[in-house]
Amino acid sequence: MSLITWSDEFSVNIKEIDNQHRQLIEMVNQLQRAMKEGKGAAVLNDILQRLIDYTDYHFSTEERMMEAYHYPGYIHHKAEHEALRRKVQEFQRLYKQNPTGLSVQLLNFLKNWLSDHILKTDKQYTRHLNNQGVT
Ligand SMILES: [Fe+2]
Image 1 (tube, rainbow, N blue to C red):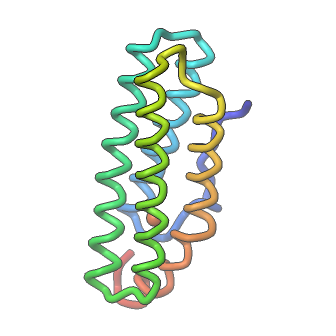
Image 2: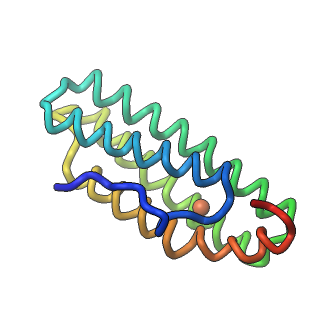
Image 3: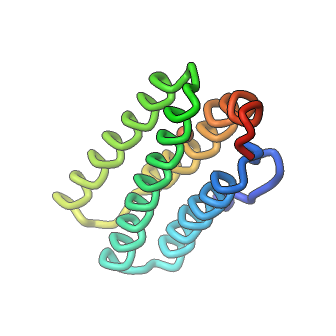
């Protein structure tokens, strides 16, 4: 399984958001490395929790921006964020019930979700926000 590598392809052309996306990618890669190195449940859970907290913070930043600049796709975009929040909470709940290690399934889900969401959903707000001077 390969790590995600940042490239300009991921850029939404808004500095603050690009920096947050880089950070998220780094955190998912960190989780993958820790799993590969066979780190214990406590370490993995700690990394996962920090990833979840940072994701919340990042979603709030995007949602505030989209709302402030009346982005027409705001409701749909926010719904995608909420679906991810619910899905990760469900993974976390199952993991707490049965802490035999974080699954490759979760990692794959996070990696695919993150790159798909940035490339397909986040990039859609670039033009609207850039046109209003947000860069
Ligand atoms: Fe987003």
